[in-house]
Length: 299
Image (cartoon, rainbow, N blue to C red; front, side, top):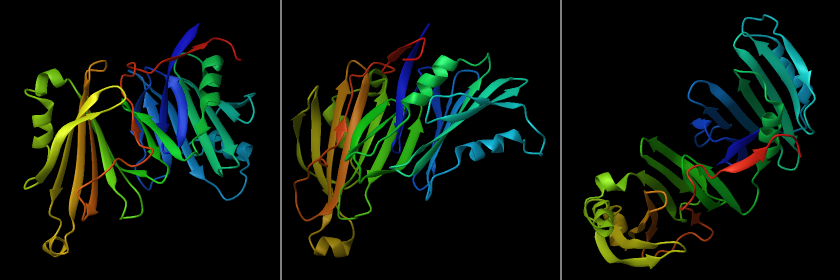
């Protein structure tokens, strides 16, 4: 038996999961790391990660699952998971539930994973999920969920996450207000709403009273993007000092995904030139689920 796995990367954590387990919750800025995944019928996977000051006692952490919310004892048994994971199996009338935990000492992080098995536990798939968990601690961080896939400089964090049917938008910033901010959005079904040239749509997306400095084409590794550089007023005082909001918008159609991608970079500046943050990469032309196949049996 094989499973087709997708990879989700959120706030520095990577995890593989079956493609039909779609993300239902993703933690916002300033919250502890948390993602949940569901299939069409059940909640299937819950992942939580947090910083710690000292090495945790994983076995003691898992003891919390021995008692229910009202204090009743639960039927749980220890699991012989591959190190460094520790785990217990909880038996319920609705199915089995795996609770697992591990420590990442160098990053001072502990990760807890809960997997729900409505039709019986699959220990090989369980092992594939747990062994896929990684912490992203490089200079660029991979963000991948909800159809978007980005490499982002690690100093940037996701400040806003807007997910609507057919339109996903992420906004990134750093703690340094002098650095540019940027947003990336992915829009579905352009054949229904894109009624004219993409360059016209991109110009219409600018804020009211924007002044367009340049509008042309920009070559990308896989597509040619429409490009608009514009300015808009911040405050009357800033305008007197020659400071305005400088904005760079890029948009392109990915015919493989049938999606429009829109990248917007903004910065308060006296200049009229703005570049993409170094290390920022937006990926498209991806398969629908970016599949990875895992064969039955542990490696």
